[in-house]
Image (cartoon, rainbow, N blue to C red):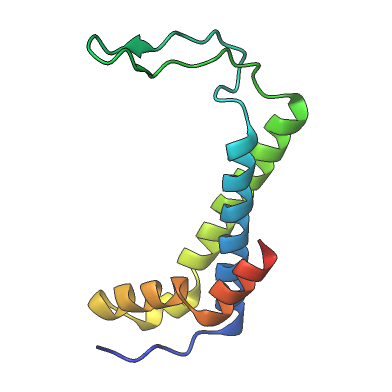
Length: 120
């Protein structure tokens, strides 16, 4: 197993911000209605032997303008930070398996993971 590379501070910071942005986006999406636009729900299906109803959805009120703007802002930030991390000049110093190993190591870098957990 190869040793963990020494990452530039700006790359670690970008990965940290990406972790935080993804966590914020996921948390927001869990609070939003299931549909962006107002849509009617549908009934679930009753199992013929047990009578348990599965599936189905309640009506969706759709997103408010504020919710839509916040979701779009956070998703744009996730995309921007993903590009910043993936196009960082550091990656040109690695090839093949070393590149993949370094990318995985950055995702789990203690400074990025610990700080992201504290920010959540």
